[in-house]
Length: 168
Image 1 (cartoon, rainbow, N blue to C red):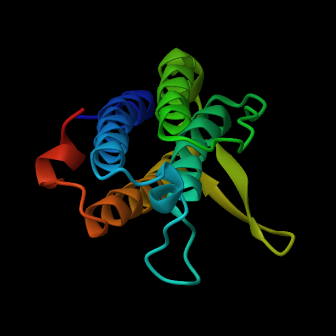
Image 2: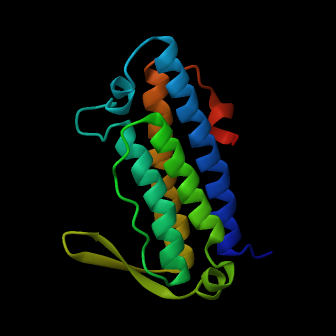
């Protein structure tokens, strides 16, 4: 059985970005209940050389929107990194999910075996098929940054469990 790359991307995106939006809502509720400024959470890092919560969410959404664009062979979308509140981050997850869900499944699936060049920093690129790009680049980065956002909030006392990460 072959599963279309568009179905994998769209299903995973809907689930994880939906869950991330709910996790961020719990973070906002926790901050309000504790009478703490949202910035305390939004700027928190698990380790000094890691990105803060806001950037983790931005990268999570960038991975799937840029991934969808590359898979479909269209220009990369521009999502400016301007969020300063939980509400804005939640809106970004919704906007990113809408972008992916509206991306052309037909265009993505036609390109499953097409080789594309992915920038990896330092002016270098890595060639890979769209299927490999999705499975070995987009998904690992997407889940890493979504899980890190979850972990930042959990570390700061937000009542979260595994189901929160898995359920939109």
